[in-house]
Image 1 (cartoon, rainbow, N blue to C red):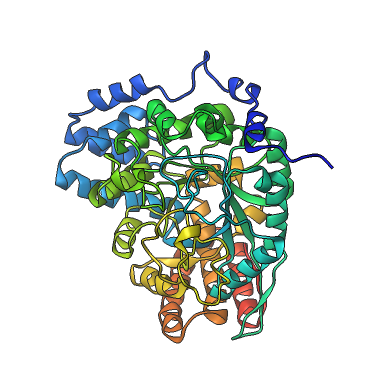
Image 2 (cartoon, one colour):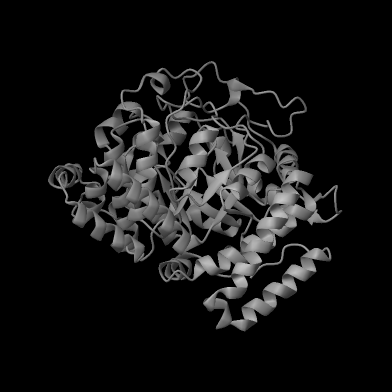
Length: 503
C-alpha cells in the first residue's frame, strides 16, 4: 500500500501551469490593476445625465463596461443612489421576476492545507477541531436539511488531499441518494441540485465533477488585488497561486460544466476595486467562452476563530457601502444571480435583497455535522466564521412574502437544458424570468403543503393566488397557451400529491 503524500508533496503536484497559461493575454491575466485604478479616477465626476444613461443601458439588460461601472461606484449624491437602488431592483425583476431561491450550505470538511489569514479553517489554526464527514454522516446532514424543506445544497469543503475529487464525487452521490418523507403529507422529498464550493481543480477532475451531477461550481477569488492576495495567502500553499484560482472557472467551462459562480470576500481590500475585479472576471468569461457567471457572491469578512485579520482588517465594508456594491453588481452584470448569505444580519439582508438579490440561504449551520446534532448548539471550534442570521427557513419565507417576493425552490432549468449559453440567452431576452415565476409557484406550493407552519401557509396561500392571477394576465403566456396548460395541470397534480413537477 502506497504511503499517503504529505501536505507539502500533495500541494506541489496540484497546479498545472499549462492550464493557466492558455488563458493569459500576452502573458498577463485579465485583472489590470493600473486600468482599474485609471477607470476609478477618470470616472469620478460623471454627470447626472450620464448616470441616467448608464442605468438605462442596464435596464436594457446589457453588461456595463468597466468605465460605466466605475462611474456608478463614484456617485456621491444620495438622490442618485436612491435611483440606482430603484433601478437595480427593476433590473432584477425584469430578468428574474420577483422570486427568491433558497438553499442550504452543507459543510462536509474543515481539513485544509492552506493558511489564509482570514479563515477559521486555515492550517495553522490550532483552535479548530478538524473533521471530515463520512458518506453516512452526509446522508444524516442531508436528511436534516430536507426536513426544513430545502431542495438544493451547496457542498463546502476545504482544500486537502483527503477531500479531493474522489471524496467530492462520493459526497455528491450521498446527498442525492437521500429521501425524506414529509410528516404532514407523507410525500417524498429529495435534494434536486448539489452545488459545490471547493478548491480550484484541473480540467480532468472538473470533468469528473460534471459526471457526478454537480450543479454550479463555485470558487471565490477572495481578493482581486494581486499584492493583497499574496500577503494573505502564503506562497507555499496551493491557494498562494493567484492565477491558478483566477482561472478556475475558465477550466470548468472548458471541462463542460455549464454554470460557474464567482465571488470576492469584501473587507480584504478596497470594495470599489473588488467590484471592478468581479466585473473584469465576468467580462473575460464572456470574451473567452461566450457566457458570464451564473451567480456572483459578495460575502463580507466576518470574525473567524483564530484569525486576527478577520476582526482588524482596515478595509472593512460598512452596511451603507455594502448595499451600494450589491446594487452596482446587479446593474453591471444584469443576467447574473446575486447571492446574499447568512453572514449578514437579518435587517441588512432584508434591505439588500431589495436591491437585486436572487438567492439566499436559510436554517444555516456551518459547523461540520451541525445540522444533525441533537442539541443544535453552535460549535465555533469547527466553523469557518461567525454567522449573522440564524433564522430558520420558515421565518425567512414569511419575510420574503411580506416584501412582495415569492419563495422558490426551483431547479427546473438545470434539468431542462436551460443552462450555459441557453440560459444566458434567455436571461438577456428576459424570457427565463417567466419560467422562474411558473416554477416558483409550483415549488412553493410543494413547500406549503409539506413543510410550512400554519402562519406561513396562510401568508403563502395569499401570495400564490396573487401570483397565479398575474400569470394569467401576462402577454408572454397568452402567446404560449401550451405553457399555461401544463402549468395548471402540474399545479393540480401537486394538490393531489405528485411532487417534483416543473416546466
